[in-house]
Image 1 (cartoon, helix red, strand yellow):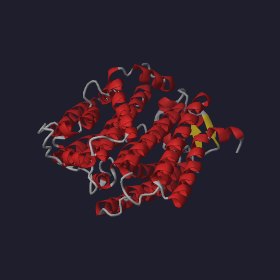
Image 2 (cartoon, one colour; image 1 turned 180 degrees about the vertical axis):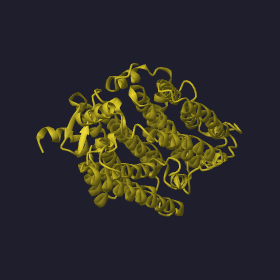
Image 3 (cartoon, one colour; image 1 turned 90 degrees about the vertical axis):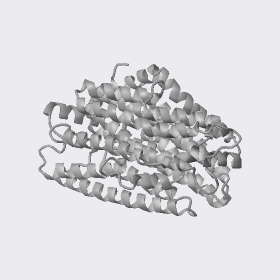
Image 4 (cartoon, rainbow, N blue to C red; image 1 turned 120 degrees about the vertical axis):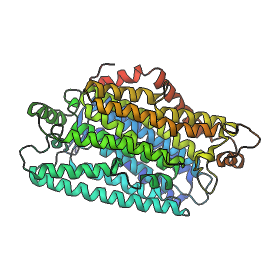
Length: 505
């Protein structure tokens, strides 16, 4: 490996070396604060070097990894989310006796896996990144060992991730047997001319991806996993875990990346697909994706309407959000790619902020779980209620929030590609989602009396105080500002995204 390759890999090297240092610190010091500070420093350093690498993109590292500007955009997003999750995790773990820094080791390894997954250009790196991410999440989900619901959630996630890995390996084996290639960008032509085994292998791999993204009909146990995991971990699963998979799928399948700063391999594969007019982006494949998108939008929102647990509501809504993203994926082109990039930012910010607020509200025994638990929160902790309201409004796609602009861009991309049925489904489901999102908001402002909050979150506020730690408060304030700023003035981010997708602002 050359010195240039090492410089290109520096963000990943920093994450790997930093995770080892954090593990050693956890083994010898058994203190949470030094591990948290080191994790924050390592993540910040990796983030800085990822930004420095922007000027050198696109570049490849052997046959396993390729970094175009869309990948670096995703890596920066993943690292920024990791930094925020480390802050919110420190806030929720600091009052728990006996907790060590090995949690932060798992967080860094999971982020390393997510970055490898996003940058992968071969089956081997794809599987390695996915497994690093998944194995770390097993332990993070079941971190609170004294709570049976956490152990149950970890076991269920283990089963789902194990099934996903089995499907993925079998599909890769079939595709490799038919084509003799382990190039991830070969998926874009569906192994054209390689016989029936190639499309079957591709279909099996997409089943594995469906389990990872938790889209309908592969969404089983998703609400249970979200409910049982600690709130910061749930936010990480909903954002980083799914976002990394969306990034690599967009690189592998969207021809819009050709000529827009993508890697040479991706551009060549996309150009070949455009000229041959065959492969998974034609024929029955779009119909299958459209069917899954529709099922995910309606299924996720209908399930959310039936729930009274806030974490389970957000779990079901995440299923619907992946359905929205599939509309942009099917729209393809520069419009679709721009919609995906912006929506990922809006979704990351809103989801991480929502789960961080949930993590700041629990008693020592459990998270404030039901909608009624949040009754009176606006009286006892108005700042938290305001932040939570902003995040909920953004997830609902209400105006003056980042979520509204994200859904508008997806709707515009769908209309440009004449996906009228899916566009109507998106509009209808966005309306449906308002009902269960506003249930949470109305509960926070119900019984607005500071003297006698009736919900568990209000009681928790009196038990643990009315102020979040300074780091967590600043991070939540930054996310709230981002949600509003991107909703009111999205042009700078859209122009930046257009610089590497080729889309007009």
